Length: 75
Image 1 (tube, helix red, strand yellow):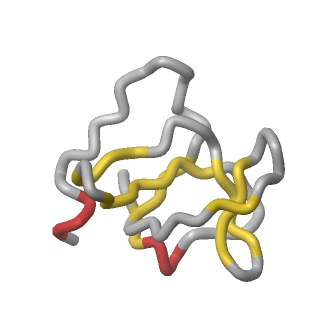
Image 2 (cartoon, one colour):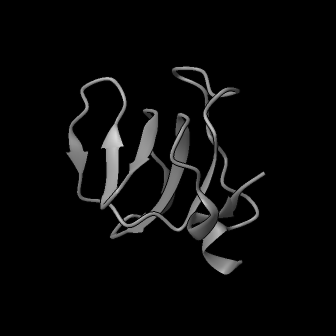
Image 3 (cartoon, rainbow, N blue to C red):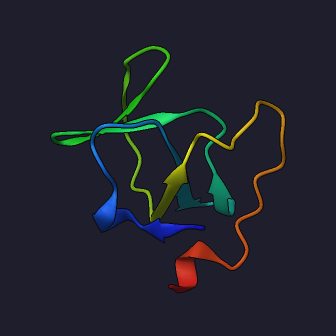
């Protein structure tokens, strides 16, 4: 279940939902919350994203479809 981004923990891999020019979608790689933003877990690269929601990455599998319904932008 998607959670409000303000409640995202700092200590685990997360799947993020973002809204951009293409509309709402989930990022396809695990992210971690850091002090002033977000980083890509695999590369430790700082990300320029403004997510709206998060959920645990644990159930995410590469190549799986990551449905956002209900629309994370509406909660």
